[in-house]
Amino acid sequence: MDPGSAWLPWAVLIPLGGAMAGLLVGRRGAAPVAAVAALLTVAASLALLVEVWAGPAARHFAGGWRPPLGIQLRADGLAAVVLASLALVGGLVTAFALGEFGRRSRLSGLFFPLWLFGWAALNALVLSADLFNLYVTLELSTLAAVALISLANRGPAFGAAARYLLLAVVGSLSYLVGVALLFALHGTLDLPSLGARLSGGPAVWAGLGLILTGLCLKAALFPLHTWLPGAYQRALGPVAALLSGLLSNAPFYVLLRLWLELGSGPLKLAAGQLLGGLGGAAVIWGSLLALRADRLSSVLAYSSVAQFGYLFLLFQLDTPAAWAAGAFLLISHATAKAALFLAAGTLQRAVGHDRVDGLRGMAGQLPPTIFAIAVSAVGLIGLPPSGAFIAKWVLLRAAAERGQWWPAVVLLGGGLLAAGYCFRFLRELFIPGPQPLRLRKIPAPLQQLATLALAALGLGFGLWPAAPLRLLGVGWP
Amino acid sequence: MTPWLWFALSAVALFAVGLHGLFSSRQLVRQILAANISASAVLLLLVAFARRAPSGDPDPVPHALVLTGIVVSVSATGVALALARRLRVRPPGSRRR
Image (cartoon, rainbow over all chains, first blue to last red):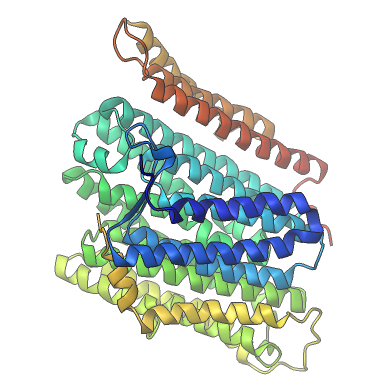
């Protein structure tokens, strides 16, 4: 039987093959192999984007077998947009890492294969269309993330990685119990057919509730967010960028998929209210902690807790416009946070520390990096012309139309608090220092360029939103 | 009480035991063991759900899921044990300057 579009498996196989090739050639060749694999993966992702743009959602049936026995890979508008953002952010962080890790160093030989493996897992996750494939790819991306965190090779990093792994495993097991319940009741794992067959009843709601809990634990929704700050603060710069921009978004993407395709009715409404409430609490709690943090990486870590909270407001405002805004918010945060973590890593390597009050006068030393920080801060706060501004505007309108005051309060208050903690470190950076700082390590031009490009991407979404919006509409569930 | 109901109930009990062990232990290796118990419990639940008819052949799809789940849990255990070894050699709180 015809297996369907060929680009889908290539988007998964190319980074996977690159990872294995990188491990085989060892430290010497890992960086060039990674560069080639990254370019090819970006090309495959964009080819898939072009294919989905033209027509209906692209599908691929592994081995030519159809569901419910076969595994189906599907790329509709949402998947294509998220895949493209994975490609762009991942490609730019890879470019940064090519400049950051010395040639033939131990870190170079380990980082690139692990990251490519994680990239393959994320691509497979985005393209999955059945519950169990989502579980497997989510686990794979978690393992890659844990290994990447532990590359920092220090006691606290290992501790943070171990904590993340254990909590992620608990989340995955909860998810798997839910999947088992749903399969036992309906006999299929394939998402489209499950959505059609889903009945009500306590067993179904128990299964969906377990899945929800597991995914919220992995997505670091307040109050299950405790593993996140430690992991983000102790990871290396590029690793923290990958974590915050891509790997931590994976559980939220799975949640989004399941929400859109499964379930309806009053209990879903109640669950949406709960998620929205917790998301708002995350925004406020994370922002307050970010205001008080003393290290730049801590500020960014708590800011990530807050930004992930915004995404959960979507479940309370259940409208198609809100979902499109949510996709925008996801991508905008990915680019802004990745750029900020890369820049924070650059500053740490340059000065030897990342205490916020010790960064005085850096603006004169590393202009492109500091400019990228400022542009990314615009994206975090949600000022025009960033994509985050458009997303928040749409969400505010949706909240006003539905008469829900909590999301509106959170959106406005969260923006204010974000401005507070962003201006805190921006102020330090732009005040002239007492004497010129001597830099320990000047970043390569490639690194500064990659950071700047990431920040500019976030603005690009704001300046030209029409194309992504049209793409999101393709095959909307 | 059919046999499959025994399987399912003991799976739930084991899952609870594993979770309790995970959150109440102070040592990483014990937490890994507890997580393994919970994982095995979930897989047992899947096997119990493979029953199709009281006397017929079981459904092979959950068995395939269980095999994949075993592979995933072994990989995760491997990574966790590697981390545990590094934590034992270099306890948390020590930093290499």
